[in-house]
Image (tube, rainbow, N blue to C red; front, side):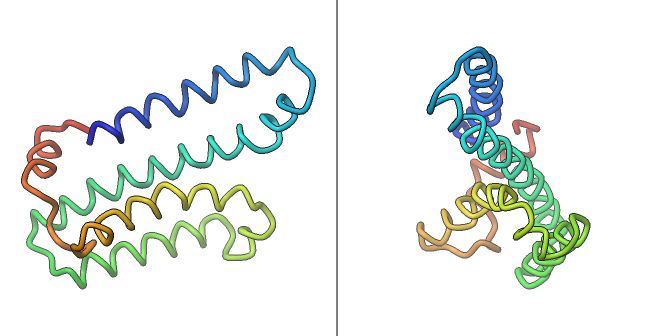
Length: 136
């Protein structure tokens, strides 16, 4: 939970600081910041917002004793709905920076799998306690 809080604070701080620092500079590094690093960090930050929102929704579904199938279908339906709101799958090819939004949720979905548990399983007790206390 702490790493997510740090990311939520550090990513926008680095993003804003980078734009302030590189706004008056020229060169390869400034061009790389404006052309790649800055947009990627912004889309990663948006994806981090999706991760935090999904965690709250998942906790609510677990509190309501939803089945793992219901939780999985809710996640898939939410992702498809968001993609359709953006303009459908073609928007991913029109604006490749949107792939950056998928990085944070992808990491979040891979972590339970790497630890050997299902994504739809209820999180460990300390995570559930933190979320119930409102510690996002």
